[in-house]
Length: 235
Image 1 (cartoon, rainbow, N blue to C red):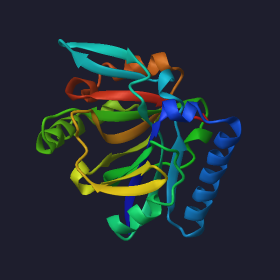
Image 2 (spheres, rainbow, N blue to C red; image 1 turned 45 degrees about the vertical axis):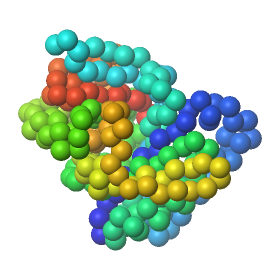
Image 3 (spheres, rainbow, N blue to C red; image 1 turned 30 degrees about the vertical axis):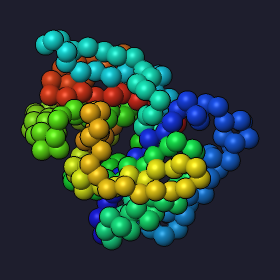
Image 4 (cartoon, rainbow, N blue to C red; image 1 turned 60 degrees about the vertical axis):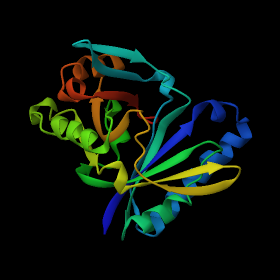
């Protein structure tokens, strides 16, 4: 069995316009979906992220680390599931059952390596997700950027703060499930589209967003690409 990350790329503007009852239905649908994954032993991990307006992006511009405040556009990573499946087709089949609102998409990407630590949000203190970002004119160039980040020193991650993480395979190895006009449509990768593409996620326990930003400014993730920092919803 292989593992896949199903990233929920939500249209935050549209979701903000949902009524309280519609939001409640969506939240309850996610709880039922997670339980269905657990019932079939497909569930590995899943987390919901706080809104992108509360997030920060850190990257190098003009040889200096720059910090940008969210939001970062209408569509943002709002959560994810990690599932086990026989192959990509089976993972996409699981993803198509994930409840999403109009304008939201799901990126299904195989895990290249890493380790997921479950129950991260139950750890003491606040827990932050760091989405590793890369922007390149081609997928080969994007993979080269990810390799340079991955080749950085492991001591970047304080052992007492690090809560696991994963690197994802290239976008051509995945698929996107989009929701439009109450229909699900599946597209093959890549999804570079001149935007910064997520190459992986890792998790750290930090006292505050400010501490997370200060730590990020000195890492290879920022020197070679960038990171988007988002607090886990339940931490």
